[in-house]
Amino acid sequence: MALREIIRIDEELCDGCGDCVPACEEGAIVIENGKARLVADRLCDGMGACIGHCPVGAITIIREEAEEFDPQAVEQHLALLGGSPARSARLPSLDEPIAPDAPAPAAAAATTGCPGAATRVLEQPASAAGTPRRASALRQWPVQLRLLSPAAPFFRDADLVLAADCAAFAMPRFHADVLDGRALAIACPKLDADIEDYVDRLAAIIDQGGVRSIHVLVMEVPCCRGLYGLAVEAARRAARDVPVTAAVAGIDGEMRS
Image 1 (cartoon, rainbow, N blue to C red):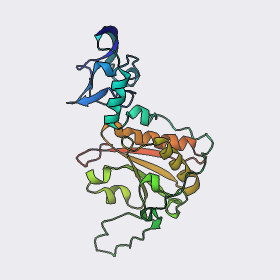
Image 2 (cartoon, one colour):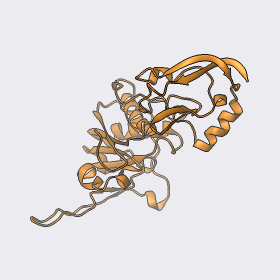
Image 3 (tube, one colour):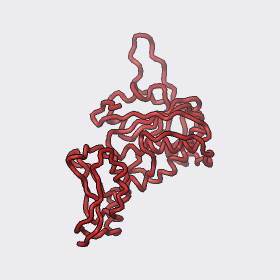
Image 4 (cartoon, rainbow, N blue to C red):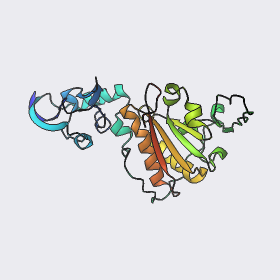
């Protein structure tokens, strides 16, 4: 034990919003039972990067007897988590404005040689009057962001949905309410490696593909907000100016916003 600075979370003030979670480089904060909690003293460096992300002032830095900060324990902890949200996606929050004034990045690589990644345009037949429309609204293949060719023909003048991997499974009407008439890219900002590649590829889709808008669908869990952040950053880097909007889906399948 040592006398040192460490964060303190006031559970009475904490509303469980989760904004502090992706702000912690060490992955030392989790949401449990609707409240933010410090996983272990040895994972907190006491720098307080999370403080500015708490909208209700529930996090402060105090000086008290605590376990010494242990970088090795942090690395082991992050390995179990698959990387911290802060390290894997240092990206803006949902309300950060877009400034599309940066030069366009180098063209992202095309798809891999895997047959399953071959670009395809899927023709969905129009529904006859009085008959139910086909359940699938998917207009393309592939859908995973890393596999998408920025110059794929289905991006031209399309509205693009950038959806969290989990969204289509949580939402029973994902195809009808979200995807219908739009192109699709899916990604997970917490589990997927190399978020920077995602940003570059999405910026190339804006510039080379010619999409006219990006609509981001995230799940209500805090770590999912990084998906919106990477879209904002891609729009900032792209030479073309496209609007980026966002919506939040609940794990019960209902839209939150």
